[in-house]
Image (cartoon, rainbow, N blue to C red):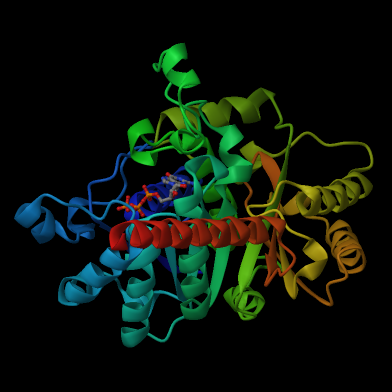
Length: 422
Ligand SMILES: Nc1nc2c(ncn2[C@@H]2O[C@H](COP(=O)(O)OP(=O)(O)OP(=O)(O)O)[C@@H](O)[C@H]2O)c(=O)[nH]1
């Protein structure tokens, strides 16, 4: 599937950059340079930068020049700025070749201002000028960030779901362990005494003060998104009977609502000897031929049966893996399974078995499937998209925190009002 990828805010910008990094390093070509970053401050990247300067738009800088303020987590201010600077944003859309793409992916963190507020307005503005489906990647804040980001995310998630064709959610709370200890914790430089004196609220993490620290989570998210959306977009992909079709992805996401992705991968043993020598030489010297036979994997005695069992197991593992948004998979409306690997290992029998298991186990009536043959892949990978999941504990938790916080703001406001009137 060909997609334009637009990152809004810091999280959106870093995720977009990571998607491009993964696209490039795996030899795919699904966005073909159709990308844009929209932010209120220049983001810090964790990976080599792939988005050229002319595709980075800064919004709101006239405000900061005028009074030194910034968006600082306020989604209403960010939305207002995005509406006021509509002309600049629409002009930046001119850089996207809409005739080349099947859809648009807008990535953003939902717990603060630019991603949550301006991102929703950007989706509206895109809808005014193109008919392609618009999917969002919405990052949910972790508990450690405190109550205000939860309230912001509860509000902005609602508006994303209403505006985008589908929102693929990513739960930082579940995934942060993958990253450096700095994120979601107190600054280690703080002294013990200082720590003892902090109140519950002081433990809220200022995302900006800990730098990015999201490198591993962004890599995990990019790997899942690219394996799903770029299926069939390998530069030198071979033909396959069961090849992934963009219309299957579009149909799966057509449910609207919130979706989640599962993923599993298994390394293949590549053959040694002359094949290994050719592989290493062609990596070192671009003029050397890079034939597919050099990537053949070591074979087992009973190949077909082994491949079938392996694929069947991978589909189960992906369904039971840590999802981008943990949820009850049986609450999904539709699912899509994508299998990537060298064509000779993509056992149709194993794939059908895994698909059948998913239909029964997750009780999903409509499970679509497709594969992405890549002769040079050294692993077998399965990605599963669960579309319109409705049984999600994490979202209920965020909504409850948001309600409690709103209530405490109201009570505090009322107390202040009483004090004022006395
Ligand atoms: N997964 C992931 N989450 C991030 C990253 N950066 C920030 N976040 C999360 O995304 C949310 C939004 O943070 P930012 O993207 O920094 O904020 P912003 O959208 O630029 O908004 P303002 O800071 O108000 O301008 C936070 O609540 C964090 O949970 C990132 O690189 N990856």
